[in-house]
Length: 357
Image 1 (cartoon, rainbow, N blue to C red):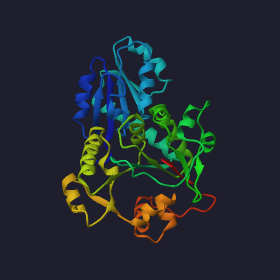
Image 2 (image 1 turned 120 degrees about the vertical axis):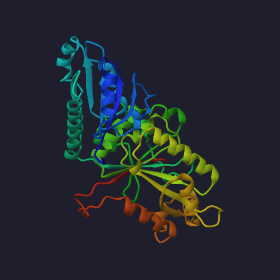
Image 3 (image 1 turned 180 degrees about the vertical axis):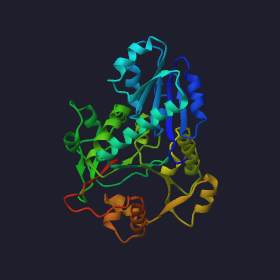
Image 4 (image 1 turned 45 degrees about the vertical axis):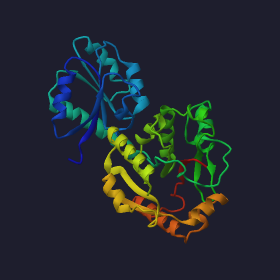
């Protein structure tokens, strides 16, 4: 079913295992995974595009620390599950906290499914009511394939996340660098030690604010599945996976696909792009598709124009719009863009990129 609700189980209480088993057999939910402890090791919780989290507790008080830990990993609605007479006291205060619903076991399975669907539906309505920019994440398991714009930003994402005060659209605007084409760029940290401070919770907050300010956000990630990348995947609407016509890159792509599967990242949100495509390197796109069991949706040609423009600090698409590479990029962007009427000048919002400058 296309409308199956993706759920994740955390914590433990009397009857929780039985509930998990019952929900796993229904056609209305898709159980992504489960973990007793709430921490970064629960990778599907961090990047699983969840619709709902069911958190069980044996405490007689509201598990504020557990809820806060879940919120570090996902913004999916949380349903608190408990059992026993002591839980009734805790449930009264839980309703006013950051949870979508509270269930006291035992419960009929269809009642639980109804609560899950209600929580998921309420979240979608909230997202639809507010402006919600589209996040496109570019991932390559090989370095050196990022976005080249020839900028020298005065500030980076590191400066933003360590700055005092609450993050809002006005604050975000003060840390981006404007490219002459109109693209707003929030550059990656310059030093590895600075990147360590750009943690999951900071990335989550940053993307949420950016979505309210821009129609489209392009995130140029690192080639590793660390915490910041997992947080980005949790808010990614479309993931571009760059492939290459060389064996080392394909090996790394295969490992990346296995990781994405373990993260329960939806396959229908992944678009495969062949980078530096050429007929003279001994491998063909069809062989790559057969080896990876995927369909390559786009090919970006091996074009000398790109290297020349990179060395000049220019964007190949802007500097050489009639080049073979620029035409291929134009086709990729057009297919990735949602079908919508062309906005007027007053309606149009800018595109933002989190990128290596």
